Figure (cartoon, rainbow, N blue to C red):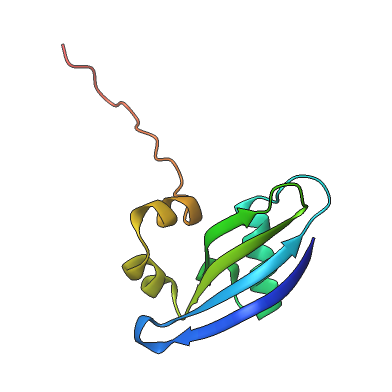
Length: 104
């Protein structure tokens, strides 16, 4: 996957940087996790601080436009991003319920 920076805009009020990339790929559109890792490595930040907002693949081509937000801290990301983006990015571990007593 090749990645090319199109635009970078700092938003200090929201403690984030908005970046736009053009990615080209070989077969299928890469997963959000793969795109997030590529953007984070390109910007030299932790992937936990990077949230992929949109991936717009181009019809008939093996390229896509990616819009991502890079936050100053994980707490800022959780406070500002919407619930859907948080569910896609911060995959919480499933909690298992242990049954200790039987009602009866």
